[in-house]
Figure 1 (cartoon, helix red, strand yellow):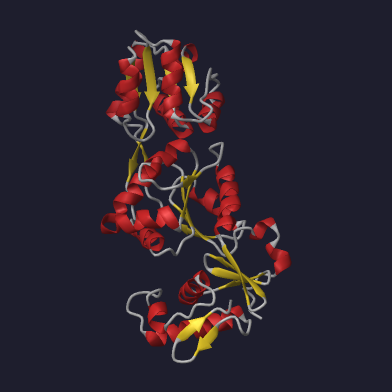
Figure 2 (cartoon, rainbow, N blue to C red):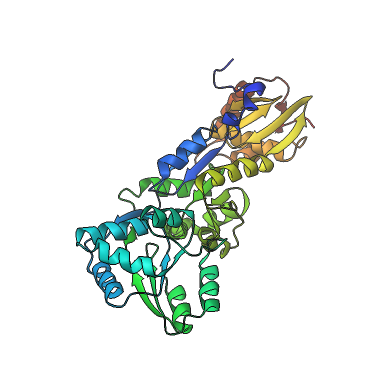
Length: 374
């Protein structure tokens, strides 16, 4: 028996809850942490950072924004990210402005847009006054405009890029806005993993893709190029889009892509959401007296999980979609990678039978093709 088989008793353990699934990770800064959480539950992980964070501590724009805050102390400070808050204070320390900036921030009404932002504020010895329950910009704008911000100054720490819709909404409510750019998003140094992930998504060779920032979604769609339509269709149907929160999910929803997201924007909660969601999408059938469940790159046969190569898995998935129906070699050929021939179908079927190790599950119908007995 193959050592790769996970027995039914082991499959019940939390550490195997994602066994048989392949999950793409598009984040950069916390990619190892997220990948580790997924791998600890049995998943196969494809790491493909869509963007990287570039600090701009020496940037003239950040220095100018800091000076503007010191000269005209803001009444309200919106802290969007933990890394941004820490980076701002570190840059101020390099300029010898830590204490003046801290004094200005301590007198302002501090809004932390999420737990990581709140943690950064408090670790700096400051106290936030409010945080949106859903961590969305819309909640922040609604809250501030309801308080009344006409004639007030709002300092907004940017989330990697300018957010003109938020700035304009605050300005329309009568506020003066100081944008504070602490870091920028940049393309990955090596774009090859991202392009490979695009191909894997379009080919349905990953079961889920995780996103921890809205710009990463946009970067993935941009990287798809001519394959954008195929990518979007895969995300709408077969590949689960898992986002850390509603702000991250927004660009996907604009493309009518269904999204799953945890109630709170934490990586551990994101993983739990995936653990809950992916098994619900698995196809389960009874075949020749055996129970058969299809996960991404594996089949669970009578409770035992048996990993399969892409070609045998593609054949099994096609046959399992319509149990009892005979599929010709030509029909099965269309499920295999381009360039394959009918001999490749026979090889895939042979490898599938060997991988399942269960006689009678794959039937040959002479001169017609193959089927799963219903």
